[in-house]
Image (cartoon, rainbow, N blue to C red; front, side, top):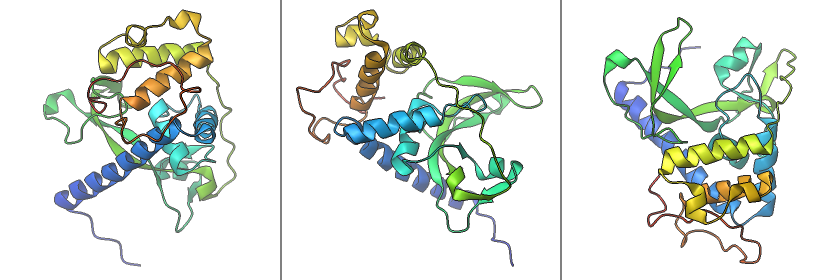
Amino acid sequence: MPRKPKMTDEERRAYSAKMRGELEAVMDRAYGAMVASEDFWATVMRTAANLTHPDRDDRSPTNCIAIAAQHPNATHVLSSGDWRKAGRFPVKGSTSLRIWTPIKRRPEEGREATAAAADGGQREVTGETAGGETRKVSGFKAGPVFDISQTDGDAYEPPAAAPLAAEVIRDVLVNQYRDQYHEDPEQAGGFDFTQEAPDNAVRILLYGHAWRRISEADAPPFPASTRPKSPQPPTSPRSS
């Protein structure tokens, strides 16, 4: 069977932009559903719990929402390369899920990433390669992954989930809010998180993140009686 020809740089950039646009559309719909549907909220929480593993570092809150929106029953997600290392492979005809994956570059390269930062990646962070070389994360792209239900091959036992305490998740979200929006969520919302139950504080913070990414006019209606308090959205909800 002849191999597919490699894409040119221009074709690769166009494909990357297309995949990014599709993932952004998924995120817009998901953020809207989070403030309108209790069922989808439960799906996101269940997905986040299933995907919290000690061997993975790319299951951020945003990626958990992305996966929940594309595959509500996902339990263990890896790239096709990582599945092959585990002796499994994507089933023919299966459609990959898209998540935000980091674009890393060597410091000496000195060139900016072509993709805008997403998923809290506006600030550059460093990572180490297998050889100990430090790379900077300069942006994020839409990367393909597959849930275990979309694969076949050798028997595979996913590592046990490592649930995080609500207090830990709350503190992570508070720090992300400060780093990404350059303001304190407690000042923006006018309440004290220490007086809130940790799980309720997590919901408030995620709600605040969602409202910064969709315009109020585009969001589905949310009953006032059940709307949680949240940090106030900025003048331009898409400023993040």
